[in-house]
Image 1: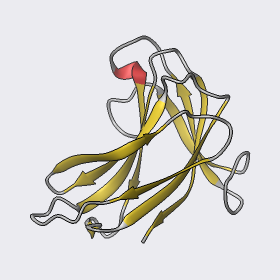
Image 2: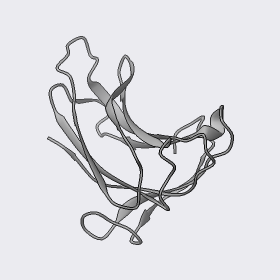
Image 3: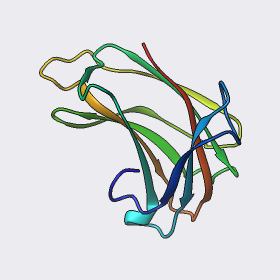
Length: 141
């Protein structure tokens, strides 16, 4: 779990809901309020060994939320880089029980902006969503 994200209660490997294979990442969430730490949840996936050059790469993710979230809820993918965070567009919305596939093109940059230490999956909601977010089959090529 990331820091400063009070809505993420736990993260585990789950067989309850999966896109590909037999497991997915399951994030249990409880969002509270309209601002502050309890309106966001974050899960980090570290990329060994520490820094990976993702310049010009494509990242594909699969996301589902059970139960369906309000239309205001969304998931953003942020790259933790050597020079700071870089959120790439578009966000995944709406978050539903049906698996959504989102593909991201990482910009081709120099200066270390795409030397990535981890992928940060960040969910935001200001309508009190309580449920499970599933992330599966993260592909970088």
